Image 1 (spheres, rainbow, N blue to C red):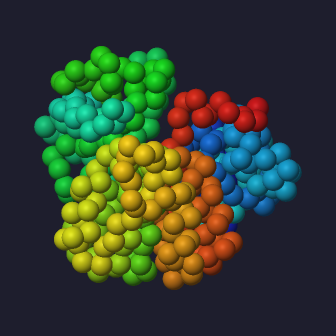
Image 2 (tube, rainbow, N blue to C red; image 1 turned 135 degrees about the vertical axis):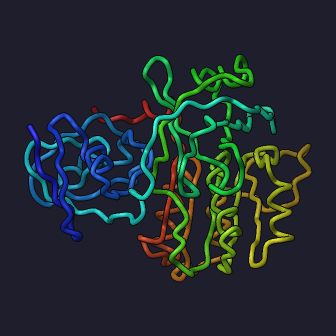
Length: 345
């Protein structure tokens, strides 16, 4: 059975099958609903059901509680229709500009930057090119049918390869293979581009770029894109890690601070020990932003990293720093292990 979904306030409509999530149907129809993880963990796709009924698949409690669901909120990445629907969601312009592709790729290079971070470079077939926006991600299609998502770490113009920053999750099916078995020239298949976390080039607002760990990857692409477009918008990058070694491209960020006009870099470490000889900022990275910029009402924020950091930053920036809710753009990195914590069936 096919149902009709109407999006407010735009009034755009698209069909959705009974066994299909609202988000997948919207993507198929070229409707730009915001989304990130696509598995009920990050809440980026959260919206309201104004008319009609849906049922939810498994999702995280923090993304959508039972109480919020009873108030009419929904996660469109795991909600399927029982009836025709009228939903409320802010649409993202430009999402359907580049079509999603399934492509083979060859591992061109594996460069270990730290004990637990590898930069993987992928080479596409000679007759193929992936068009995407800086900040978007791809999903590897594994042989067992599972998927693994990684942000593209270079801007579309910047390299003949796609580069990804992969952190080793011990016991993780894919990252164990990458760190212990994978060799250059291995063939991988992926689908992309995906996600609505990308640089909004139509704005002139100053940008706060907020990253933790390998959440730096899409932020790097966004910086490269802004420089390529000769943007004059001020940018300040706050990059947080537990130890200094987690800031695996620290030297690059320092070079940006020296060479890019209106760019500043503030590294923040939360768990430095004596042997680190760390003399820089300490504590939680989002709190460093709040200390420096108590009024964010005129800013855009791009945040990427672990879900706890992203959630804390969004709540604090909106409630305490006056950041408009529609100027916080986020991509929360969720591991396979994280997906099984606090799940609502």
